Length: 435
Image (cartoon, rainbow, N blue to C red; front, side, top):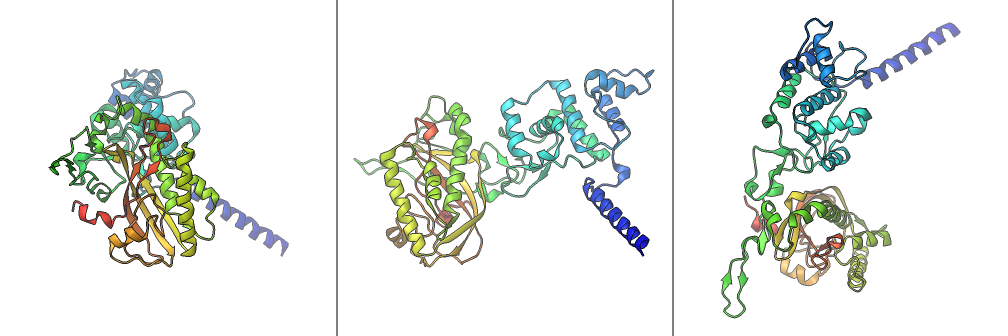
């Protein structure tokens, strides 16, 4: 009996071990016969690069790659194993640098490593820079993490098919065929573009057309001459600019440099602000929430103004507690390339997926009445009137777009720029949508 029990236990252990090994293997979508081995890939790469090959060597293509620095001693225990995507990235990047030198800036490399590869920690540390560089160059683009995602999955342990290997070599040899990558390391889409594509510097692959196809605040507006009541158009660049041309505005001597230095800060401030607004619970809201909100407000650093803003926030909290308000978001996305300009104001577009879980507030259909009655918003906090919810269903998820303005009180000190003005609900924009 004891021997039988021991055998059963041993079999159980073996089964568990087999399961662990199996699940640890890279997921594959290609038949094993189609995977390319390291030595076969090296031969294709050496041939494509037209490296000198000594046919008298035992492994002439391996030796040629070693001599050129494409391969390095210790890269592989054996050259007859299947090539993984991480090793493909290493060899492809070395080949590209052999041809073109190092073309990826330290700033872009750091951004891609920190923000653009969701599974970078699953890649061996010694291979991460090469993986980041081939993604930054558009040689290997990885796999989508869904709409409004700021990163992509690399799947470094997956094996590589022969066709995929040949495709990567062709991209190494001809940079014009590579995927387009944004200055901050995100994949650009070049087909099925939104109607407003011409107004943007580029269109991101993970952002759907409906994110871009909203009219800008300056469209359809005209300034009025106070003496004659004559309506005159605003002057492009001087008074307004689309995202594509915002670097040309004259508020700063060199706005392109200012934007390059501070855009990430502005994007994060808008995201933080939006996260606060769309994640509130009357049972748990506290001083920490207030401080987090005010830290990215335009009034931060100006105590006399900040005191007034805090008073407004406290008023909102009083209202939302009385109305038993609970709001939560599941996704917030802010894209820096959406930044546009209108009369001293800098505007970023935000996507929010949220739902109202609890509130006793009942909004009607008359937006003008709502503006009169709700200067701060009774469900969502805003600095100025108004977030027009118009109507809503408790517990129902809602996807919305908002244009959030950056404060101009301290615009000459961009470190202090925060969020001001209203966050506008998509219902207000219904009349201004393109399609």
